[in-house]
Amino acid sequence: MTENNQTKEKLLAEIGRLKKELKKKKKYGLVWDSEREPEEVVEMCKEKLPILKEVKSKQIVVDRSKPINLLIEGDNYHALSVLNYTHKGKIDVIYIDPPYNTGNKDFKYNDRFIDKEDGYRHSKWLNFMEKRLKLAKNLLKDSGVLFVSIDDNEFQNLRLLVDKVFVEKNVEIMVWRKSGDGRYGKMKNTTTFRNDHEYVLVAYKNKTKSKLSKIKIYPNFNSKPKKEGDRYYWVGYIARGERGTNKSHKNYYSVKDPNGKTFSAQFELNKEEFLELDKNGGIYWTKSGIPYRKIYTDEHREIVCSSMLLDVGGTYEGKIDINNVFGIKETKDAPFNNPKPVALIKRLLDLSTLGNEIILDFMAGSGTTGQAVLEFNEECGGDRQFILCTNDEELDNDRNSKKHKICSDICYPRIEKIINGYKNSKGEKVEGLGGNLKYFKTDFVDYKESTDKNKIKLTKEAVEMLCIKEGTFESVLNSEYFKIFKNPDHYTGIIFDQLAIEDFKKEIKDIKGKISVYIFSLGDDSFEDEFGDIKQKVKLSPIPEAILKVYRRIYR
Image (cartoon, rainbow, N blue to C red; front, top):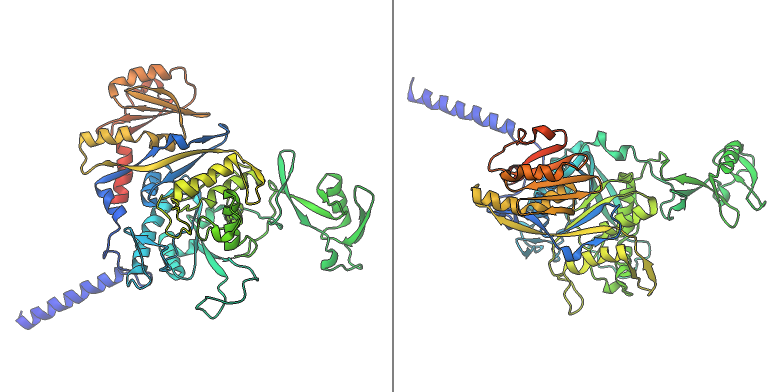
């Protein structure tokens, strides 16, 4: 073969190789520079593993029969890493309000605010969001849903990123009206139109299994549900009245209220159906004698929800909400910039929950999601539980000389006041809603390599993580070699020395029901032989290997 032929063969082979590579490449999607500036909080996890440590002085316990809500102070990447061990596949709903990357000191990357003129500001934001969205997806149940608030600054990029992480068919969009009709006069907008909207991206773990396809919503969201014994109900208008009455319509008729006063109108159901409802207590009569149908929260009506979020408050109401809790009169003095209104989060809860779900907000900020969960439980019944994660940085936008820290000065006090009660901006006393809260901080264990010493260290520091994973916070026994915790339904045992297994078994012999047992092991031993005589009673797991497997997957 001549030299020219050899060169030609090599060229054809290279062209063939490149064609194969091109076939592997993404034809359409989002591409950005993900290597230029690694994120420091991610890089540190190559040598330090995140754990959680409880701040016991900030525990709030009002009703031990209710779920324990969690507040985690620390970087949300580290908190999500821990939750990937404690709550993988357990979360029903995630809501986040991420930094919008406006260039106005709202987004930090590697401890620096990202300026609007930074040529890589979108890449840095996408790096930040992708890592957290991937960890968040692992936490969701198959039926779970993620809600993300965003505005036009990053909407297009976020939509493509969420499509990538959750798959396009599992993503929908809602539009939130953030301001009302009264905002006229001098405008600071640089756009042609008054900017009254933001978005809520809706991402399903698996849309076909989502509760949103099954949840029924109610026709009157602005009213507070009424209580009737152990049940709650909204009221729905069933007489057309001034909205249009046709006296010749077949459903135009007269009825009498409980006081004998006659009410005539065109109704949305026939007279026989109305009288049957009224006879069985299904009609709510106002003092002025107008009938409403009772719509019970446990008998949901099938009404398709609009993608427009028009009646759930705006940015002004968000400031009113937080000011009320802190007793602040002027909206300009709100302790937190641009908090979301509680009503918005309640609407999302109403769409996605039935009563006993776990709701996570890993960008919790001022704690609006926590307040919304507690109020929604009170108004609609249920034992929904929240997990909030936020850092404790000083706010850069404080309007007075006192600097506020996000978690310890705003988020935690807000939740504490909702639970225990407070005086609102009018000086009126507002009763607490009750509930329980545990406060944790992210911490770290040095772990540069998998040595026996480091494994022992991680095991001893992981006690709080194991209690969170099992939901068992009450200490039953605390010895040098093993610990036992419980909740009303379950026990957890943690054994630090294999030689203490027999003593541990003696301690649990009178405990009824299943016990989760975590046993220190340098390897991945099952310990089934040691517990063979009570294998029906225990669920065994070696530590720290189970934790390390999660971290290896995340940090690989």
